[in-house]
Image 1 (cartoon, rainbow, N blue to C red):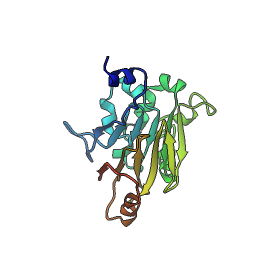
Image 2 (image 1 turned 45 degrees about the vertical axis):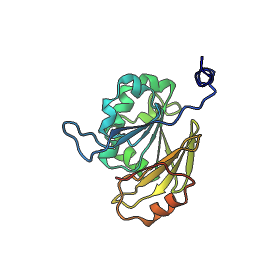
Image 3 (image 1 turned 90 degrees about the vertical axis):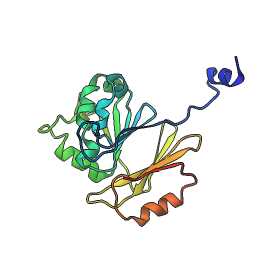
Image 4 (image 1 turned 90 degrees about the horizontal axis):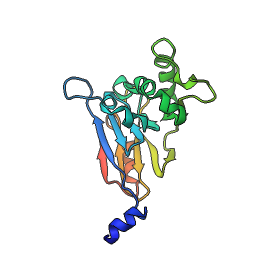
Length: 200
């Protein structure tokens, strides 16, 4: 066996971060899906209609969702995703990170028992299948060896972008919806490394 394969077989090589574009359109139609990016097999940045193209097995692996803002093209699949993988989420709840304003919009207008069940209270409030975690601008959260830092953007509702850094130092940033925005460029210019920038 060659040395590289032997090290990989022993778990000696780190797996590289993978980014999959599930959707990057502002609307729907044949071949068009709204914004959603999958990082590795367990993390989403936004949850637009592109999430619906995943298999149930792939959806069942999702553990973390980082939302940029509350507009429908970025949260479209959230309610149906949680409903579709309810049984697997009993064992591994989905944690949603977002601005407090975005979380409040989801609680008030989507997960409100009128539009959709409040999965942050199911099967019970102590052990829900959906957990909301508010973040502050500039805050960094580490999940499974990846670091995600919330970046400032300029949009019609409270919005953010994210800088995503892997354990090996590789990184990318996603702006979310934004117009002219000096704060975003300053934050990105301060990053130690930036391999890819996705601007919406």
